[in-house]
Amino acid sequence: MRTLVIMRHAKAEASAPSDFDRQLTDRGHADAHEAGSWLAGVEPDYALVSAAVRTVQTWEDVAVGAGWDLGLAEYDDGLYVASTEAALDQIRTTDPGVGVLVVIGHNPTVANLVALLDDGAGEEEAGNDLAAGFPTSAVAVFAYDGEWADLDEAAASVIRFHVGRG
Image (cartoon, rainbow, N blue to C red; front, side, top):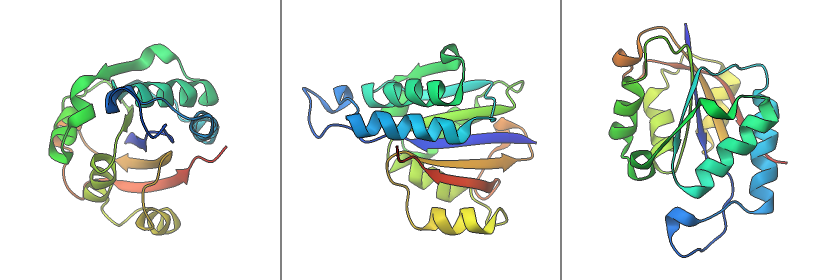
């Protein structure tokens, strides 16, 4: 059984010289750290993180909150602009030896990806909470019984859902 953690970046400032350069607000840092604390006990083998400043900062705060090794992350420029299908394709290329994968990206892509992957057979409360939306610092944890290369629509079960609020 594999674990897939999909997260939306934490609250970011409204403007910056470019959208890519937007940084987390103080609340965003606190929310990401709290989400990391909630994820403590999950031990990722690898993290795929959008290279945008706010997602990199989210990863750093989550990793500190969870006690994870910061070096597990690959910062990917393509994930910043990826469509839902492109993000799924990136996940499918994950090394088969990875058992626990963390993905941190942007809406609408991550919200659409979570909805696409959910088979509806997971934890009822988590599924209900997930159906209410995917705000900043939202984290969906999926169980998936298969190879990353075969991950497809309705192939994973949401087993936990949380919105980080520090």
